[in-house]
Image 1 (tube, rainbow, N blue to C red):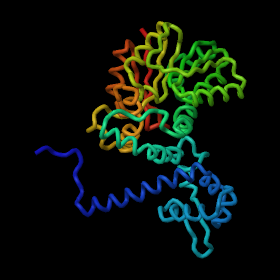
Image 2: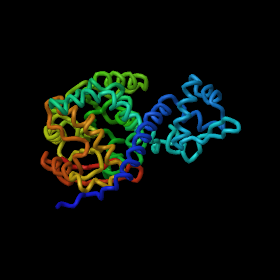
Image 3: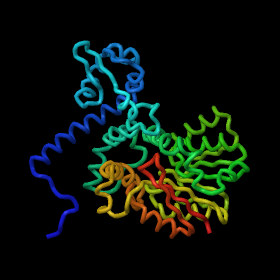
Image 4: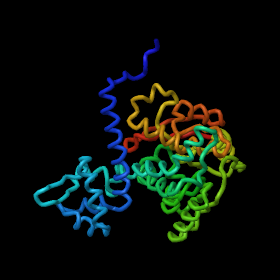
Length: 357
């Protein structure tokens, strides 16, 4: 008999774990609401306060706030003082739940659960019939991704990520051509354009909604060195046009990631750099059983990354394609000198630096 990867708990222990799972899943929805409504941010600035005072500080309906607080108290996220009927968000909890806690605000990621739940019926049909769920079916996807990127990429881009490539900051200062594939709302690209006005920046994304948002932001910032376009990046069809190409959490959910990587290699000038951020995991399931957010990653993959690829008649690579597969595919696309980096602020992602032939 084969030995399971994980020892199975007793029936009673497993039943208890399922109850914990239900409670934690419910709390995740409430954490998402606390983030979206600004309740955590408001409470972080308050001493112990009544539900009415909290609602007034956040400019929300008191009855809904009071019920939300019930979930937060019973979930041991907020402290409750019954004698005065007051609530308090401890500073050590605020350090993982508020916008001021970036890049450590876990509440940003809680939004994915409610977002993915909205397509559950369609994913269930895919289990039965195959196929996939298209990007267009996901409300708020680019909004949530922009917040996610704001923590993992944008906040660390200048000081931590760019220095992974020797000489890149100096080259950007002097002026080079840069492309970001799958740029979404282009927060990373716009930060680069503001920081390095002598360089020229292009961003492509399949979503017209995301590109419209990015264009509006670029106009508001008065950026003349940015070009943004709605485009399927599967077939770039550009030759030796860029010195740097970036892909932040964008490769694994493409219909044809292999074609994209080949297109990126062709679009770089000789000696150019490809900088890719993608999920930090193994390509082999048995190596991921102890991953701190393994269930979360596989769920996002099943409910979004894999299915949007399959919806476009793609290969359905999935979010947990893993470091081994990523290195193999980047090498097969024609790159050399592939280096894999990890950064202290980001346990979720690897940063790949590859040089064009």
